[in-house]
Length: 187
Ligand code: FE
Ligand code: ZN
Ligand code: FE
Image (cartoon, protein in one colour):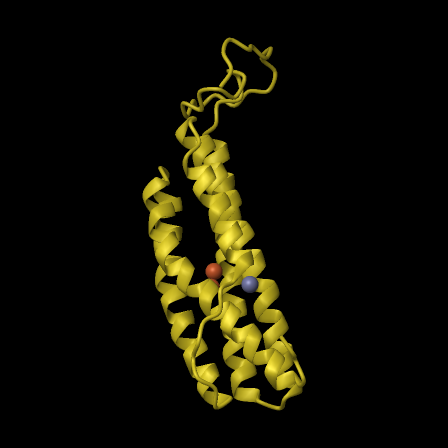
């Protein structure tokens, strides 16, 4: 397609993110359902509500630019969510699956952070401070979600049993590193 102005480019970017967020509204509940840790389920469910607000915020941004709110397939998010599906099909301990789900979810957050930083800067350049501010708010929410996921990853991994060749993840409270490693079984 021909992009002849920053305005046209921004419109394309917004359509892409709009599609990405709408895909997420459908995908996050599946990830929350696949998660075992309560903290992870809560973090995902909370971000689902935040994401619904982000969809509405994008509609406001379209309006501020006098553009129709239209979505155009975001190949990047589609791919990230395909990886998320792969992760949810994995066979392993709850802790390992949770860690894998977090890995997929954090990839999504980073992708969104990149996209929102880009459109925020474009909106600034176009002198639309109100739109820039709305996009910055979403960017901040994505950063917060990413930080929450890092904290949850630490909790989930604290429950992994490192003495059994990492195979069972049974939540043993013993975390001594001085014991010899045994590799009784492998996943
Ligand atoms: Fe988002
Ligand atoms: Zn995209
Ligand atoms: Fe997000």
